[in-house]
Length: 234
Image 1 (tube, rainbow, N blue to C red):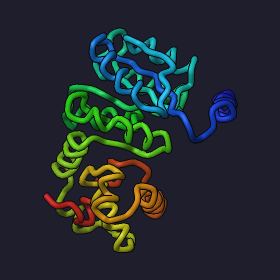
Image 2 (cartoon, helix red, strand yellow):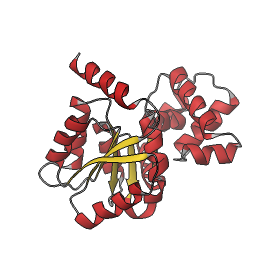
Image 3 (cartoon, rainbow, N blue to C red):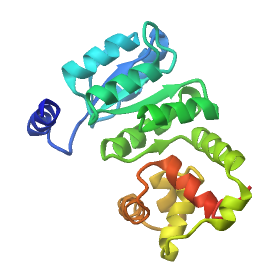
Image 4 (tube, one colour):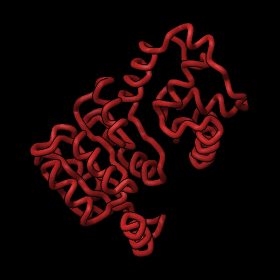
């Protein structure tokens, strides 16, 4: 009840739309300054607090209840993964995006299992920060291309051929199959819209319908399903 009350109070004060309130946590001063500079150039973003370790990130998340927490994995005192788990346990409505220099299937999967809604590489994908923030604030998952590729490769390596053949497929429309294939390939909502000639808002609507129809509510689950039904092949 207390969590619900905090959520309702925050929505009452800030509304569902408008400014995206961000907590930035990075143990490297220069890296944090660079990300902060990018955020300050975004009209619809407000930096509510900064932290240089995982424990402070958790405490500040409870104090400010931001829309999104940007976390590095390599945080002192408490790792980014530990901080993510703790933030999601205490404040499940606060979204977490991992922004790091590390990318492999272990880190990506662990971050998603911990409750992260996004995963971006600092050097290669930092310009995707704006669409990532906008996506995760609405409850969507946003993976940078490198993270998505690692996730797909990991799922492919573990998907048994027999299971793929025996999978019972839920009927999907042609458009839903297209959306599912694009998601499994790691495309962003904007990139999917450009490929299919539809707006990002329409893409998000299809994504929501797809998750509801399949009873799958995370990207790893969608990727595994796409592999099972043969939309993505090894």
